[in-house]
Image (cartoon, rainbow, N blue to C red):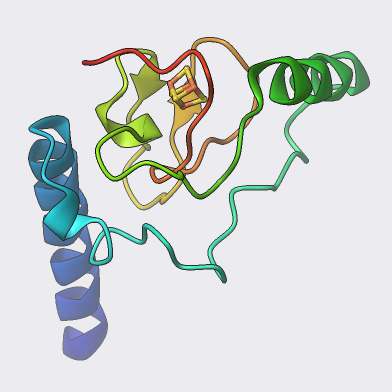
Length: 113
Ligand code: SF4
């Protein structure tokens, strides 16, 4: 029980640190925040309707969204259109496409936060 609670606390702390650090543009924290972790995809679309899934797919294609940014300094977590993950979640959101967005993702509409 205690060990589990510590794990949650560490995770919560790390998420808060990531939110603050990445908003400031610190790419050093990316790996600690899950960026570049190929096993942590933000591709669970089970909360979306069929129409939202279709809209997402269209936006992914038109914006060339990828889950791993090709840029050192531009990624979803420091984009003004990114919405922070809820507590306990790794994936955030985007004002342009429905569904989860990876903090280390990128698209052609990236704008500095
Ligand atoms: Fe990521 Fe693009 Fe959305 Fe910005 S606009 S959060 S870069 S998907």
